[in-house]
Length: 97
Image (cartoon, rainbow, N blue to C red; front, side, top):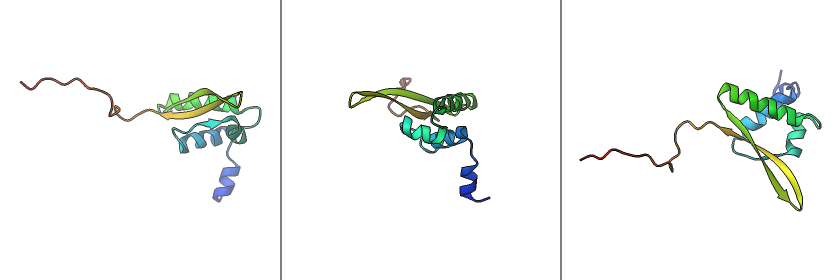
């Protein structure tokens, strides 16, 4: 089975998961997600993938509402769990003397 055939056989949920895992930190709108998850079912697929990613300890999918040209749209992003603390996070240190 070649790459194209493997992609064709993916379920909608697998397509949504692959999109988020391939692009962590990128916002996706409804049009992009409904292409992979199905016109009427993409929100359910995003919810299922969010649940699975949280259960596996990989991260979560967050959403935001944005206003563009008077219309309100939903966008979703995969936020992985950080491996360590952020460099900007202040850490209290013991005095040497």
